[in-house]
Image 1 (cartoon, one colour):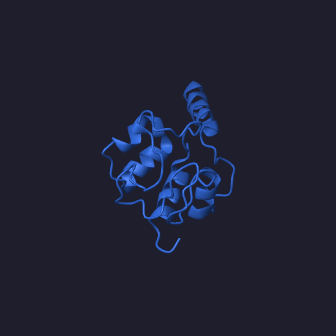
Image 2: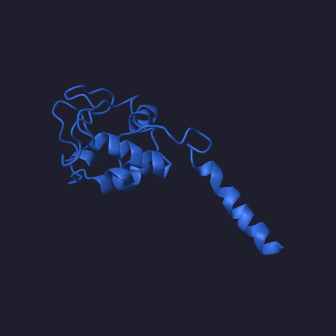
Image 3: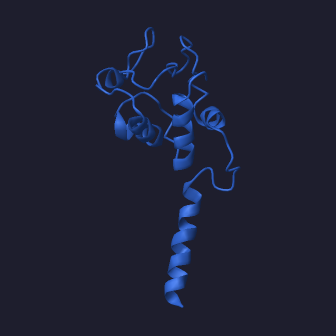
Length: 126
């Protein structure tokens, strides 16, 4: 009996870690972006807000959008955004670029939501 109890506890302990637990599994990439990123970012070219616009971010050097006051850490990071790097950054920005200036944002815990956001950012015509 005891091993089953431990497995159940391990499974239950992981549920609160994902903010999307219990939410609609059919959320679109745009909705995931809006829920987690839109407060500070847009995907419209030239529309910088509290954060730089994310238009055509794939293949772009970090800290390179004109007329945006990036942190020194971001400007000197030498990162070129690709899917893998974005997934890690969206999960934990401070772990990827320490001192990035995105406080109080601490990341998206849900792997599914991170994947949806990156797919949305990669999609043409957004």
